[in-house]
Amino acid sequence: MSPVASGQPLLRHLAVILDGNRRWAHDRGLPILAGYQRGGQRVLDLLSWCRNAHEIETVTLWPLSIENLRRPHGELTDLLCVIMSIAEQIAATGHWRIRIIGAPEVLPAPLADGLVRLAHRSGHRSDPVVNIAVAYGGRDEITRAVRNLILAHREAGTLPVLADGIRPEEFDHYLDTSGQPDPDLVIRTSGEQRLSGFMPWQTVYSEFYFCPVHWPEFDKGEFDKALGHYRTRRRRLGL
Image 1 (cartoon, rainbow, N blue to C red):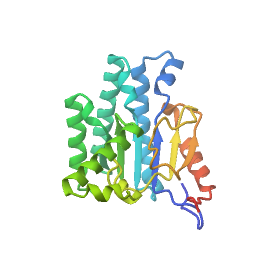
Image 2: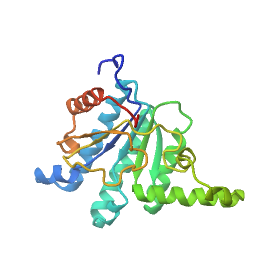
Image 3: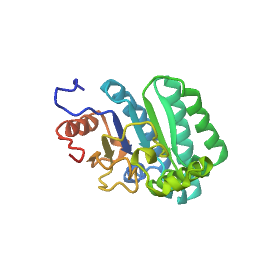
């Protein structure tokens, strides 16, 4: 990818909704696990492309929504195993700080503990951040943020102040992405043109790119097209 030209918008935070793994496998007569595995490999490819783009300092991946937990047990187990395997491979590269967002505590304890340990071990690095959104839902995140904000004010004895109003900057502090820039670009694969509850607070001024290919077939050409689309945007940010 060529350097960012003067006047083009910087891309600091890229978020990707990894959609279409099951459909990719179904179209090829393969087991669903094969789609998850191929999709996992694409995650590793994506992170390599992001590193070469230089300007990207945060990547958010959404492989598992909180609604996905209602999938059949065997299918869900396969997906969770792939997520853990890919997270371990990301950590092994030594190029990324891992941050787990969402509600990992609702996952099986061994998996949740393993993901948290990976994040803890990489937390000291100064590398770019990769958020792995597991058991994530936008409404759930906002609900948790409100609850934690109220608890913090109750503990500090400042609940009367809370009634006078909450500044957006204060609320940001209680979101899963606290301290990070909001996504500049959100990519969703597989042709679906909706966010399905993905980061409703953080994406109010994000640019969106809906890609027709399923996630396992998302390649460098599609990545470059998405970034090229972003470069053409004139970001007003509400101004």
